[in-house]
Image 1 (tube, rainbow, N blue to C red):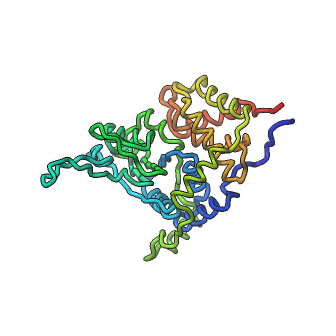
Image 2: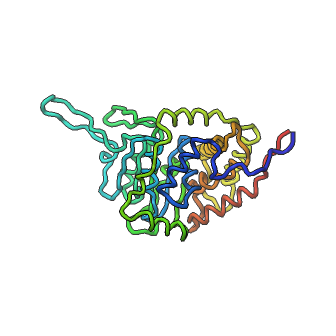
Length: 323
C-alpha cells in the first residue's frame, strides 16, 4: 500500500445526515459560526467537555441553549462569581425536621448539559467541585455518590485573563476540557443579519429537536468503533512527544491530551461518514485539543503563542506512511 490519502477529510460540511441537521438547526440561532458549531458537536460525539474563551456578548449562552434544544437535553446555567460555593454547584444535604433525617437537594449540576458561565471568575475551591463531575460523571457528597445524567456535557466559558475579576484556571482543570474554542466576533454580514432578526423575536424560537439522549448515546458508541491504524496511533503519540521536547514548552501534552486527540479524530471521521481515521482528521482538531494544555516558558502563554507552537509541531512531525 502507498501513503495514506491526503485528500481534504474534514470540514464543517458534515456528511452524516443527523449531524448536518444539528448544525442546520443551531445556525438558526448562531449566525456565521458554522465551524465552531461543528466542532462543538464533534466534542460531544467524542464524549468531551468544551471550554469557550471569549468576550461577553458573542453568543456563548445562546449556543449552549440551542444545542440543548437540538439534542433534547436538560440544560442548566450557573453564573460563576467569587461568592459561589461548591454546594451551589453540586447540591447539599438539608435536615428535615418532620422526617428527622437529612435529604439531599440536588444542585444545578444535575442535568445533561451544564453551562458554567465565566468559570474563571470564581474561587479555586468552587472550580475544583467541577473536576469530579466532569471526569467521573458523578459527585460524592458526605460520602454518598450521586450519578449524573447520561450523557453529561459541560460547556464552560471564560473571559480573557485581561478582563477585570478573572484568574487563570489550574492546569489540572484545563486538562479536563477536551477542546478550547472561541466563537469570536461575527463578520459584518452576520452581524447585520443579527440586527434584522432579533427585533422582538427569540433567536431560539425556530430551533427544533433533531436527536435525543438515547440517540446521542448510540452515536457515541458508533464513534468509538471508528478504526484507527497503528501508524496513526504512532503519529498522534509523535505529535504529543514533539510538544514535550519543544524549546518553548515547559509542560507538554499529557496522555489525557493524546486520548482526547484520538477521540476527536474519530468523531471527525464519523461526522464525515467514514469508519476510519485519516491524518487530516487529526490535523483538523489538533490545535483545539492541544493549545490550552500547553504551559510555555517565560512570559509566553497567550492563545497566539500556543497556536504558533502547535503549528510548528504539526509542521515538524512527518505525515505517516503505510506499508
